[in-house]
Image 1: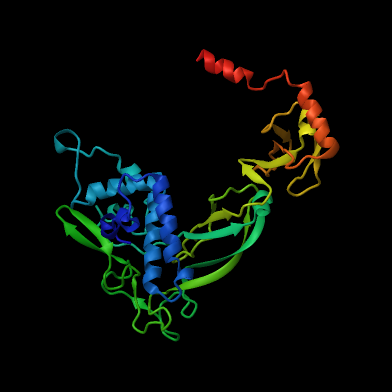
Image 2 (image 1 turned 90 degrees about the vertical axis):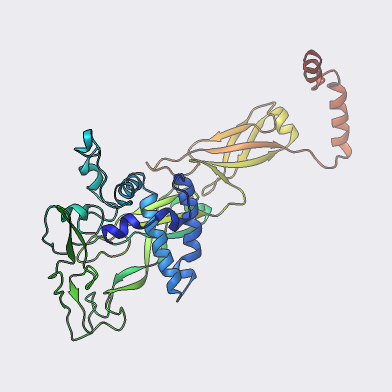
Length: 384
């Protein structure tokens, strides 16, 4: 991507978010658009594929606070045309060039990002095309509740740009080879004068590749790149949360000219469980107990997610909603230890009572008639 393209491309407009959008708003919008335009959901639709690439490119910059700041500064600096200076009497710039242009969002030196402006600012000569890092790839996976708690290895099918297999990335038809671009002499960039400065732009004739393809490959049409679909086994760590985004280094699209692969970002969705819930590293479960168990106390048996049931001591006089804790029976943490199982007591009332049970309850009511559980409520109401 050229410097001109980079600073003129409105990533906020691509995602349809305002310039003051929060990171959470940007992420929410991106996920919605990515699902809509993902190549797997729009097979054969090149417009959707191009839209997906633009969305991913915009999200890569705007989701990273540092890269977003650099992008905003670059657009502020160059967007209105030319460089705007600062300092005393216009004699200097009021920002640090090193901070702004090192590690450019578009991939660093040679990638056509902001840093490439100064590659030719004081040097009118061209440079050889540099390795270019591969694009980051986004995908999603759905895990069962148990897989999310204990971790799982899952197959992921990904679609990304890679070197064309037919021409091995040269862009030329079999039996032919590209030739050096006569315009940029293989540099991939051309310099244009602007007063005392010279700015470098990608060569229009070779589109920044430094080579001209006279007889293009029939599969990639001379670009040297093609859409590649592959399936790989990915390990999802134990304890992953619903909607969590995992980064897998160097598992994204292949780089160009020997550049490093991009990263793979996996958004995890977790199915619900009919019995267990989750609160951070702890699992939760609601266990019904009878009125005699709650009143008199005792030992109750509680199920666990992937192991034998545990026995917990229920104190006498336990109220509805009391929470007991079974240590070490929760989700796996990053350090390998496990959270706890939080057991909520739910006192059940029989729907129908007859015989000896009815007689016993009536005797209990008579024995406790002097104990009004609502007495404190009325006293508090009267004193309010």
